[in-house]
Length: 375
Image (tube, rainbow, N blue to C red):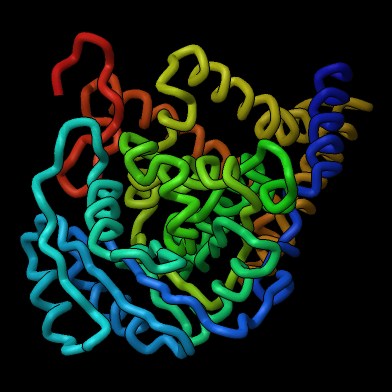
């Protein structure tokens, strides 16, 4: 028992030393420049059945206070709810609505829509790839371009503030960003090295760098497309990723089931669709997150003290993210339970993949099929 407790505590001390938990990588602290001539930007927005959010998202784009040339292309990806008509009714001269072509084999729907929008964008210096459920403050693009132009970056991405109003969101959403930071520490993403990522809701990309890397087609089947894009562009030069209050998700997840479905859509893809990795991930989550409270409650002596220390340390490392999302610090003690929920979602992701329903999004199963399974 003492050996297990010491191991768990050592793991958390090691994780603390990485600094993944910090929230200091923010748009308000990033190096930025104001170009002498503001370059042309084209925003590309993939949209599939987004009638409930598209007007707010596009309206925020059209209202950008950007000094340079700026246009918006919405790619209406076979919507059945009038998404394209709502966009056209906005009457903005900045917005062009492009009717998407049928999805070819080997592409995810979002990346195919982005590919069509990028092809229609002509040759701007920057492409702003943003989701149809993200609302932006008027100075978002100006800030993004300033960060992108600083240090000759190839990509600048904002981790949008996720919707966190429903009870399920308040319990589970801050941890979503925290776990993302654990996998892709923002400070390491922003330094030279192999760690690369982006946040798909708000990504500014140098068009020439993307073309040199093979374009969107180079990642056409990626379910975790934002991180695949970050890795693709970091091979071309520096990138930047940080937290922001300027870009906000406006899509609510009203229940834990809805959040679980969102996580399950891509969790198994993160593990390379490998059953042994899935088993290892679940075992690792049990060791890192669940062993500490079990030891703190049921063990005795040194094992209890070490387990309690590990539990309190993980709660402490969650505090900066809880503060960012304005949640009670007591939620830190719930990290083991939240991790158990995420482990369940990861198992669900693997199960759905083996049923041929992996990567399900608005009627499309987009995950890589198992060998021998028709799609």
